[in-house]
Length: 278
Image 1 (cartoon, rainbow, N blue to C red):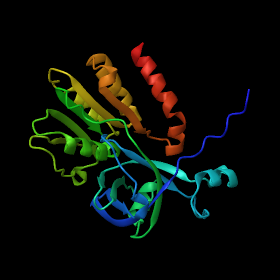
Image 2 (image 1 turned 120 degrees about the vertical axis):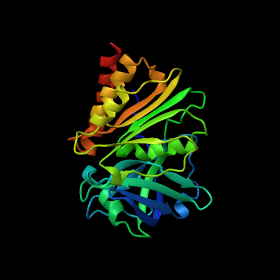
Image 3 (image 1 turned 30 degrees about the vertical axis):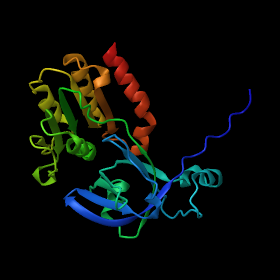
Image 4 (image 1 turned 60 degrees about the vertical axis):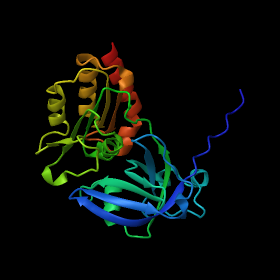
């Protein structure tokens, strides 16, 4: 059998920090711009995402930046680390890309970068990708998530038309983390304060206690994998929501680094689905 050629890495885009804003105590907004976004476009999805590329500390790469060259010439531990973030906003007129970051001090990689990012700083990324947008034919919409899913939920809410029936539950640490969105009349968020409880515990209660409206629901449930697993079981088995009407996935897993979670995420999701479909 002929040896398969190595798959080429996708071409990375380059952008510069235009400005930053701390929109809540633990959420920082970074706006990127520059000539590298000249051909950047987003489509119909409200959960469009990009994969940010972070060089390990002390490592620099030759110009022009080329992922294939890096993979060929650098040891794996010196390859860029990726972090996936939702496109919070895209301004095609000014060619500006907005990304919101959850920041908890020096914890993690992307959050601390966003907290200290300065105008003119370069960020490289891959994408965009995406797969969900609220179905305008649905009778009503269910949007559920923690802070990590808040940007995608916000975009979905801003996309929904006036009069859409929506139940949106977002869990944040406390009242200081709530945000205001420009949504159509009648579309509101039910903010749930964690108040020291395990992430997602209060969301589980809220959805289980929800008096489900009649008709076809289109649901978006994302966030910490533990509560997402429980909500998937509830929606599929107890509420009988068809699989194709659910956009549901664990963005992160408590107790695991991003790399460790990504290494097992697909297998974990497949196992959960098998358990709940059997």
